Image: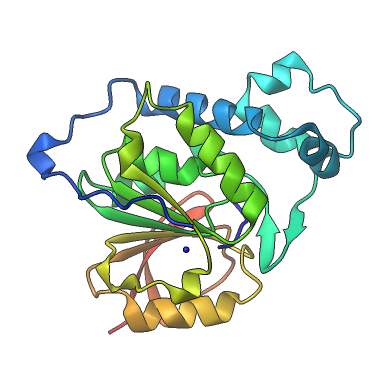
Length: 228
């Protein structure tokens, strides 16, 4: 999701790993439901802006997350970066490799919240930071509609600047390439503050990432660790 980004929801205390129930639905079904709910939260003016179409959205698009991503032809240029929704199915292999129950997960520029919700559904204590007020509000609306498939207390949404966050307490990070207008500064902060055993998931990043070693590649996403 190309995005950026404290009004802070109360940060819940992470449960012990033994207390975390496994997902009740297959991950692909969870991803589909999350993406449909997030897309449904978009106001018509946002869909018109990003699709270049007057609407209404065809039913086959409303019910198919892959078609939704294709329907939205352009990014939304927002303060501090860009927003474009991630197709979660493309990201699932990297998330499955990196996210473990109880892990502290941070989405750097969480947009409509879908990656945060997916990580929470996989058992992570997931946090997303988004600078744009409207995107933060839309994510909050979607969060409120997903309580039947995930523990929403595990999905924390912050509105603010991720440069003000201390990264040292997180186990897994997610960032979508070009999501921030200060990408190099963000990567430098990650190199300084990530623990050596933490994992960074990068989506749609081209070439080498200075200061990081790639652990594995999963299509358009890869997992990375900081070079000591």
